[in-house]
Length: 176
Image 1 (spheres, helix red, strand yellow):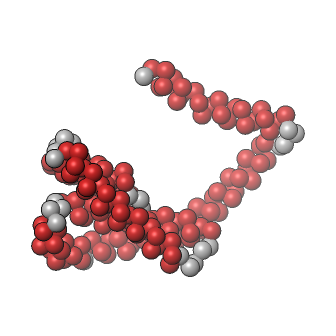
Image 2 (cartoon, one colour):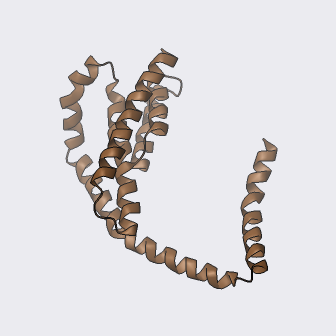
Image 3 (tube, helix red, strand yellow):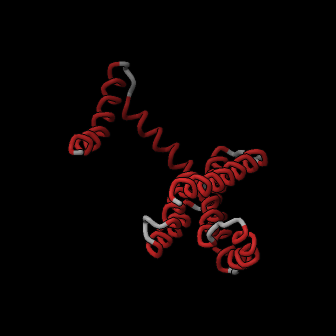
C-alpha cells in the first residue's frame, strides 16, 4: 500500500517532467505550447457554462416542483411488483442527470441503510454501473458544438437502463 501511495504522489510530477524533457529534445517550445493549451482550455470552459447552467436549472426545477416525487408515487406499485426497492429508483433517475446528485442519494442510502445492506450494495452497484448521460451529452457535445444528439441520447439512456437492471439482478443473485 505504501508503494502505491508513493507511486501516486510521484507519478504526476514525473509525467510532467518527462513531457517537458521530451518536448525540449524534440525542439518544441513547451512553455508556449502550455500557454496556448491553457487558452484553449479556458475558452472551452467558458463555452460550456450556458449548457451547465441549463442542465442545473432543469434538475432543480424537476426536484423542487415535486415532479420526481410524483413520478415515484405513480410507479410505486410497479416497483413493488417487480421487487425493486423504491429507495433506489430516485438514484436510477438522478444518475442519468447528475453525478453529484446521484452521489448524494447514494450517500444518503448508505448512511440510512448501512453499506452492507441490500439497498447499500445495490446503490453502490448502480452508482458504478450507470453513467451521467445527460451531463455527458450536455457538456461534451455542447463543447464541440454537436446539436443533433438524438441517437446518442437513446443509446445512453438504454445503456443506463441496462446497467440499472443488471445491477438489480446481480446484487439480488450475489447478496440475497
